[in-house]
Structure formats: C-alpha cells, structure tokens
Amino acid sequence: MSEPKITLFDISSFCKPQAWSPNTWKARLVLNYKQIPYKTVWVSFPDIEDTLKKFGGNPTGVKPNKGGKAPLYTLPAILDESGDTPVVIADSLAIAEYLDAKYPDRPILPKTGRALEQAFEQFFEIVPNKPIGRLMQGPTLQIQDARSKRYYAQTRWDRYNFKPSEISPEGPVRDGHWNEFEKGLDKLAEVLDTSGPDAEWVAGGSEPTRADFIMTAWLLWIKIVSPDEWEAKVKPLNGGRWDKLLKKTEAWQTVL
Image 1 (cartoon, helix red, strand yellow):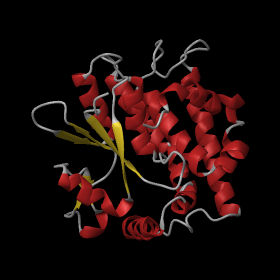
Image 2 (cartoon, rainbow, N blue to C red; image 1 turned 135 degrees about the horizontal axis):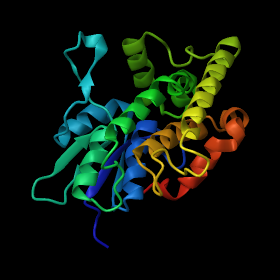
Image 3 (tube, rainbow, N blue to C red; image 1 turned 180 degrees about the horizontal axis):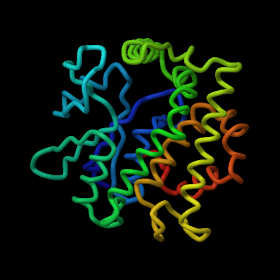
C-alpha cells in the first residue's frame, strides 16, 4: 500500500491513542468521514511553530502578548502532497473547505445554509463551550510531557493571565463552571429540538455536517482528558443525549 498523500499534524499527549485536542479532532473527524487516506504526525506544543514553518504553513493569528505583531501558529494543519506542489492548510474550517473542494464525495459543509452553520458554531463557542475551556485546562496540563507542560502553562499565562491548574480548582469555583456548562447544554438541546424529534443531525439531513463534528470534538475533549468527570457530570445530562452523539459518530473517531 502506498504512503498516504495527506498528513494531519496533531498535538501529542500521554493519551492512548494520543488524540485529545478538540480543534484537531474537528479536522480528523472530517478526514475520516470523507474516507480520505491520511497519516498523523504528532507534534508537541513547543514544536508547533517550527514544524509548520518547515513545511511552509502560514500563521492562523497573532500572539496577544506580543502587541499583536508576532505570528501565531496553531494546529490542526494538513499537508497535501498529492499534487506537484505540496499544500499546507491550517485551521479546522479552512481544512474542511479545502477537503470538500478537492474531494467532493461525502461533503461535510452544506451547499446551502452555510451562514446558519457558521451561526451555530458561534452559538456553540459562546454558550456551552466557554466553561469547557475553563474546566479542561487542568486535566489537559496533566496529559503533557514535562516540556509541553512548561510551554502550555507559560503560553496560557502570557495570553490569558491564568495558570491552567488554577482557573477551575476543585470546590465551589469548579462546581460553578460545571453548573454553567450544564445550563449551556440545556440551551443547546433546546435549539437542536426545534428541528423535531426525527432529526438526526444539526442540519436536519440524513448525513452529518461540520456542525455535528464541532459538538463531537469538544465532547471528546472532556471524555478523553477527564473520563471520570465525563461519566459523572456529562454522560447523564439531557437523557444521555451527548453520549449518544459520541456513539453515533464513533465510526469517524479512528486515529490513524
């Protein structure tokens, strides 16, 4: 069998398999759903910038602690070597757009209603997702090696002025974050219920779209880095709805 022409750059960890990052899961789920052969290169946090520069990748933003001038390199990114000139695409949405254009079978972005798809992502990022970012900082720190731990802790302090281990400590603060998350999931469930009891996916069709994979990716983050809290605090919510979503998308959660 020939070597896959597409490489997915993902963030390394002690997890088995290593995949944990919600943003890189968004790209991995799309690749798996579209049945595109690929391989994974695992990159530690401190090496992301140099790795992307090596292959000609572009920054996806700027570092907020550098006065808005220093470029920020993030994952996911893919390297496509199927053509005469290798192509590097960073950012999960840009990757989905690129893959749908080049590999149109099993599209993941709807041909119509793209604005609604984007609106759903913004809604998800603001409502249930905000407390996830607080809750998972400490557990995420623990799945990194010593070098990545130092980098992760320092960059979170530089960008957001907090230590990952202190943003959601055990006790009333963390309990409050879980309550906020639960309320956000209740609102999300209300939105999804407007499509009717027979709707399987966010867009209402017979196949998932990227919106479904956005939800899946963030839920996987919790399940992978904090499995006990997933079982106790998330799995039972909304009649087991979120666990059912992960089961529905399980076929596309392969880590290659």
